[in-house]
Length: 128
Image (tube, rainbow, N blue to C red; front, side):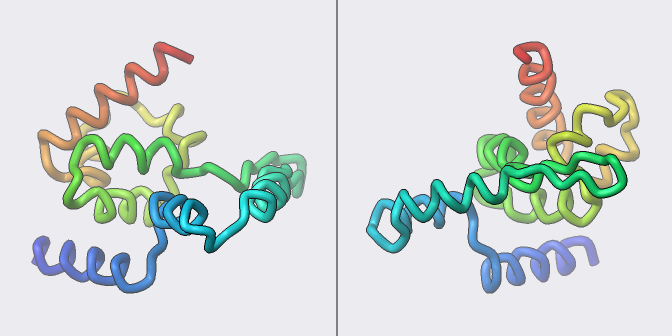
């Protein structure tokens, strides 16, 4: 059941998703101008202050995606989808309990990938 669910998520991402890598390739091949991209980034980086809560609209999963690519080149999309499913953004990632194994198993079930990701996260938090 787990493997079937994993395949379904990966198939859905492959059919519908566009990664940052794909977007960069499109820009480099002339499909998107850098000027248009700069305008879009400015627009997306504006803060929404609904009810006094600031929500950054750009880059919510950028570091997570990069780290997952490093941890598992083949199935990083599957893990990224799990972060998005649970709405664990980069901002929220900083506040997750470090020793809650059940939480981490839910997001990254495989031990090796989970421990490598957590090591990268710890390095990121130390360097900030």
